[in-house]
Image (cartoon, rainbow, N blue to C red):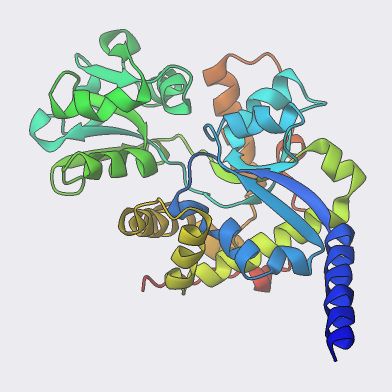
Length: 341
């Protein structure tokens, strides 16, 4: 019996090892530190969706949604969650190296200007003569001149105070600036962390509501992975899509997966962030029409033009340089139903 049990254990270990060796390793970078809005990747891993697709996905924390692009281009990562606008920039400057978005998740842009309700700013025209705090290099700050031109604002009448991202909300709270150029999904929760009420006491001027019809974060992969292992890309997309759709009606399982990955997160705050992402960035009219993960080509072409102007790029990338729907599951499998639980 002892010999039998030993043989069985060895056989099981060898089988497990062989299975692991058969899996394709995918080095994956998040857009930032662990957040509830990353839940789809953790659910896909915890529930075995990646493994079912023959993938061993190694998930690392990120350094910013724009940095996802440079991390992939540098060869350290095969795929990641990041900003399509950074892809546009690099597809213009280094078209042979820029990654490609294969599954759009945040189809509504998080770029916004946040102001205090008590500031007296009641329209975007009131930004003129005021000081806005922005972090250099972020899309919201870089695209402000296009926002101003699109909405016939005098950019010379708007003072920009450059600052580190972590200073924006504290300086806004202390009235040292009149507004902050932010990502809403970050700034909203920074205000909560500073014991502010971002709903009752602040106004959010969304770029998407003022002619800046941009896309934002999603699943991107390297050109090398696209060329060398398109089956792995297809499997990665299927797994992330399956998890994303399930989370729409089951945030409990989603948050379990987030905490399993990083037990130091504030689960209450990150659950709110997860719901924020679904309510305000994902569950849109466009997603209801074409399904989660896809884009509207005409809208993306307009977004590319906005980024080219705002970033001062010399070449305009084509839509298919930036986004590929080749690996999307059928439309009926990408039907997002969102119910906060």
